[in-house]
Image (cartoon, rainbow, N blue to C red; front, side, top):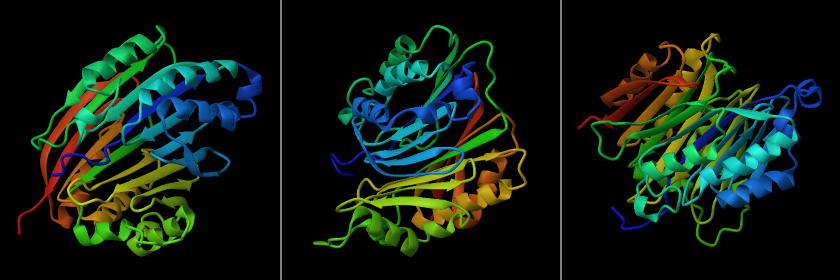
Length: 341
């Protein structure tokens, strides 16, 4: 293990808002009315920038210098890696949303276990500090709060969760989220995420090539992909399909290699098997020695299918933990390791 390197494990923040202003509600734009300069101010606080973007009629998707940003009319999701200060985005987002007549009604913060925890700046030095910062930053109307560390039998993987919600606004509970963290990637496959020395291709062009040669483009052929390759290595993509997103981020350096895959679905759809199939394809792109899957869902229809999807790939479920959270529903955290040959 390297003494120091780039932190692949992301921090993820999901904020939900409500509003009664017909200007923002009737046109169904809401937070999408935030100007790019306002988003830049938010990202400056986090210490990252936009490198690519795409949008459709439902939401805007941004590839960042450190991961991704998704902006819906009443929901925003920011996911950042490295030594970013993600929680510092909360105050400016609440401020800008207020200017649009929107009020925060729900917050969910999740992350795995950092590979290099001592490199993290305030307020991410440890989970206790993160919880204190969240408690002090969130408005008092978010009165239902819970923090938990979900353990596993794998020392490198645990799941940190903080949720908060108000009394009166229910978040749609049909949507489920899969958050996948993969470590110890197959070395041959990881090399595909390096640019050749002296290469002159732009991040957009090199990103499209990586999407094709790695098979990432086949994970969900229905999605419009916005991708970017970093120099000398690393890769990010956002997939956009109707009102659903997927996202992949890769830190391929040997010794601290990491990749993440995240996607969302609805329990009312007939495509749970499609989403689980996408999970299987994403894992095959990297063939990690160890991975974790966090499933956030109001029902228990999704998480049992995760093991059924991954075990045929030679991965064995080593642990499974479950807990209930305000506004999030049930979170099930599973870890897997490759079976010894």
